[in-house]
Image 1: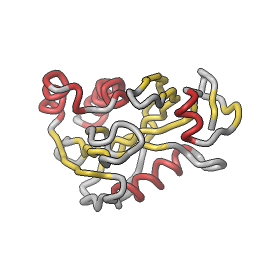
Image 2: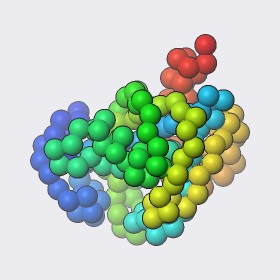
Image 3: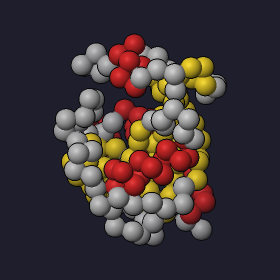
Image 4: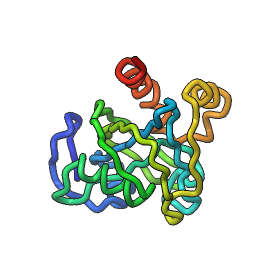
Length: 170
């Protein structure tokens, strides 16, 4: 779905066309923590159309035409990670990133968080690897090896962790 800078739907466009033209569109990112406070990370499949092999949040994608963003977040969590849990929308942000292959991410991204100790069953077509990571180690790794992580993950992680620390570690 094509959106304006305020996240209001302005039309539709096929996903790859939006990425080729750099048209702003709706997306979402899901962050799942376990009861130990570790974040479930996904390594994107190597053959993804961009960011293949990079580490990122638990799952991310785009809603389908007529699908609400929360429903899309649940659908993709099940499709990519073989799990589901209660999700809370934390915030939205916009970002633009141009990739070396010519594709452009220009997204209005809804960020969701959930807590679950269910073991993921990753979809090998979408996911090259998974790992739970302590957040302090993750922040250190982001400083030491930023090129291992997706652009959107690096943009929103700090805000996700701030909300998580304020609301879940009491």
